[in-house]
Length: 259
Length: 259
Image (cartoon, rainbow over all chains, first blue to last red; front, top):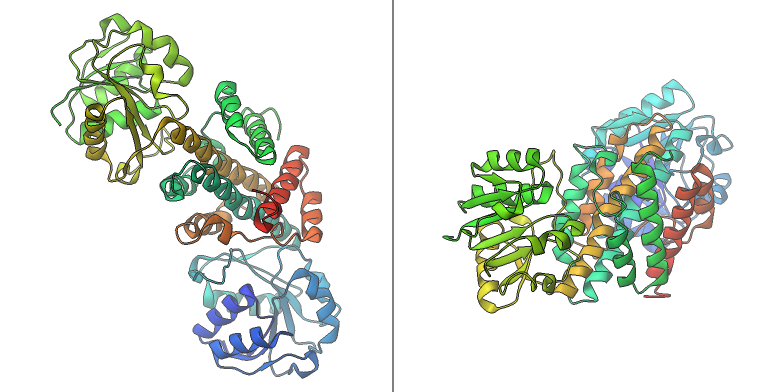
């Protein structure tokens, strides 16, 4: 891809995207972050200049990828002169049209994955959800997305928002279930690693079965003996309440009494 | 292992354990289930006789593995003459001592994994939690467990119960989070498979990081904008309530305000 790209932001997501584009030969011409430490660290990784003041952002790029916190996005956009170049944000829950104020050409480049500072992720398999205000802009984002991933999908703003909520359940909430499980076993001197094969198998199962068909455990059988017994073993009242509510939700969902 | 084994029960767990022991050369001499269809199906898989009446259970075996529902276990035990042979149950939440009534030799053989009818599982990596009333009986169960798994652990009844509760969070509740996620995206015409890389990565992450260190998302940042926005997108009031409670629990846990 011939187009030069400027990266606005230097957090987890901005860093992973910039480094991956660079690795695949896309020219990153500038990095902006208001925090000098972050800006310089990312710029060093990909060997490009950085700026920390919006008025120094060059319009040399053909595409600006804005990967900043949702809160920062609205404040930041009016301060940048994009010269009507293509501008794409990376946010799950923000309408594409929020960019209409700052350029005639805009879209979304949303990689559906969880990124940590300390862990490399294979970009190839990450679904990249794209959307744009014109077919030409969609084509540009599609070409770019295809340089880093084999799974590029056109997803509108409403679908993307539903994906973001779903991702909170499938990732953030799942991780919290792991956290609670780790505390429950460690309390009795059992190391968390004993749960790892179960965690892997539970995740792998849904590659073959729909979650509805993969459900096991006392809740789906409505086994009140075990449920009551388990609740008595949970000291924390919030976690006990979670046990009760999730068990109820499983039983209702699986027995088809609602949803 | 020279000892003959009788399998009491023919459900998911009984079947997986019996088939795996048989595959590793352990002699299964009899299968019991009150349901003829289940008993005959399992017996056919491993080429051994079956019975459907407790009085026909032979005392030829040196070890009886009782893999039946928690509810059935208490009713069933007094009906069987174990001739003081070694008897082990496979239940997560039941004390080993429940077996003291029916034999002088008893223990627990608890594979920590989720078993489905339609999916093969690699037994090698499944942690098998064993416990017994004497060192000699523990040795027998250890030898047996080592024939099918490389991860055999001595776990007492209290630890095993905590593991069972933890497994409900790490497996059953996690699967329900996947189910909710699948419904949320399918409502907007997005196929569930788009979430699979995220689900895999979330599970793989905890091989490297503690769940506490792997947590991401709006709840840990206490981002009330996104949280409110997401809750408005969830039609089902129970799921909305789950979203709220799990988010609160994440924030409190991660910020160290409790636990």
